[in-house]
Structures are given as C-alpha cells and as structure tokens.
Image (cartoon, rainbow over all chains, first blue to last red; front, side, top):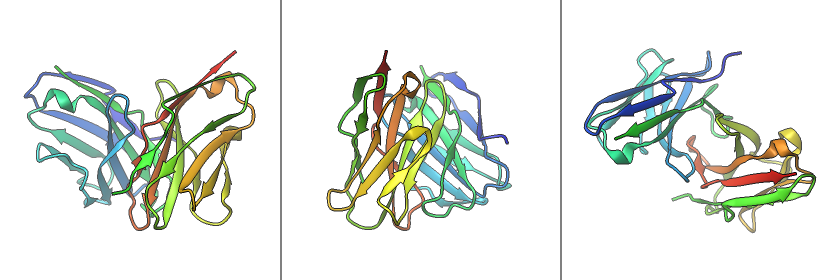
Length: 115
Length: 113
C-alpha cells in the first residue's frame, strides 16, 4: 500500500517568507509526527498528533512554527518568517494508533532551503 | 533529558566482513529502542526494535541487536555485510510513556568491494 508522502520534495525560499509543508500519512493511521533533520544530525522531534489534536508540541523551536491536522489525516507544518537556520529536511511519520513503542513509518522528507 | 550516542560517525568495511554499529542511551528507566536505516535518497526504514523480552532482537536484512541494560547499550550487528548495506543507520529511543523518538546523530556505513 501507499506509504507516507510529503510535498513538496524540495522547497527553496527567501529569508522572511512563509512556507507550508504537507504530509499525507498512511491511510488509517491516527498518529502523525513531525521531525526535523539538520545536516549531519539525527532527526529531532517537533510535534505529535493523535487524531486532530496536538498531543505533544514540546519540540517546536519557537512560535514561528505551527502545525495543523484539521481532519485527522493530512497535516501541514507552517513556518512563518523563515530564517536561514530553518534550512533542514523536514520528516513526517505516522503510526497506527500512536502507542508507545509502535513503529513509526517515515516519509521521504521535504528539503527546505532558506536563502 | 533522554539522549542517544552513536560513537562512530563513519564506519568503512569490506564486503562480507562483520560489522558492529554502537549505540548508547542515557536513561536508566524503561526504554524502547530502535534502529532505523536511511538508504541514499530514501526515507527512514525500521530495521528492528526492542520493546521487552529477549535481549537479542533480529531484524530485516540479517541485522540483529542486543539490548544491554547494565551498559545502557543497543549495538547493531551483522555477521557479513553486502555492498547494498551502504547507508546511514540511526539508533533511537523512546522513554517509557512517551511516543516521541530521540535519535542519535547516525553512523554512515560504507561497504567497499
């Protein structure tokens, strides 16, 4: 079946601009996660959705970052007033129910470059 | 806060040689441990995970890992590697009660002919 998909695959923007990154989880998965992977680093947790609600947003670095999942399926990560330090690969993952220890299935990521 | 250390950033080996990729974690409370692999231009894929029970965990593609609570380690091993195992490998942990994964910085495994 279809895995997690993310669009766009690449995004180039200028400092100060607003960007939206989209994630389509595996059908039927209620849990959705966003991670950010900077060059030479492992993925870092940003936010976790259970259904439509953000169950844990402790990883969002500041209030320029916001994510939504209005219908409990597709999620959008929104970054306002982008900075060069936001350049990274943004990864989305989903799991069936969000239980601790459950396998998270990752998408290919969106590579964001802020000039 | 939970942390994961992958001591080796790069590991070069020859084809058919054994390999061990090291992973240590910081927490002493109950943890769940994972190894993910990232092939070039692809997303992260689960290799194996430890939740409970036997400390030796077998995964896909001939990999296995051993959970050692006293040494807080979860090293990944393969007795004979192939060229196709060339990839970056990430160790991750979720601490009891938390769904989020904390990843190490990764180890780039390069298998040479």
